[in-house]
Image (tube, rainbow, N blue to C red):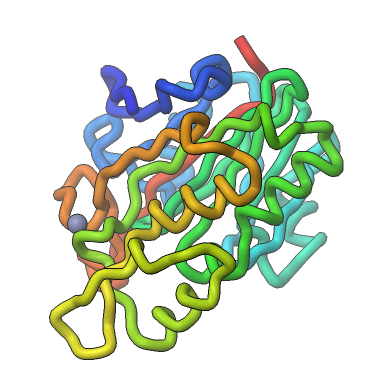
Length: 251
Ligand SMILES: [Zn+2]
């Protein structure tokens, strides 16, 4: 990923993600960023797509996906599904999809030919619930995206070096329709494991038809990566939030 002069990160290798305005805002963007602050979200919008309308949801680690059109607002999404929405898809210029995280991977999607983009919040619950598969299905079925064209980027998140999970969660990953063996390493605690969530997401994307050559992985761990990241684990639940944003308009 590329880091610009105010500390925003963008994906570089997937061709279509280079061409669409998007960013990951870590804790040290502008010298201090927390997505819980309204003024920080506004600064992010102004820095990426000043004329766009920022659309965000109440995230609950679900696999629910919402389509954002010209009429969609954050408030209308809250009315649409009180149980939470963890991924947004759009082909409408002038909207800026927004999601927050503090250890959970944010997964960015784009298909330039369909003018379609998406942003998914995929922590362990969302990943085993297949929010990624649900997001791709909406992109393909409703916005004309094609699996063989879609590109994806996975933002900094809890890494396989640090992200310890308990036996119930290990069992959920072993039950996935991919081989998760390589993503689970023994940890110091009995029956626990260190989870490489990026590895799992890459396998799930491959299974959905998005090959490894069309996926950029940040490969940065938010738990041991220091103060430039907000980490729910490291701060024991008192962390700020980082942001992902992507627009439906190409340059
Ligand atoms: Zn780490």
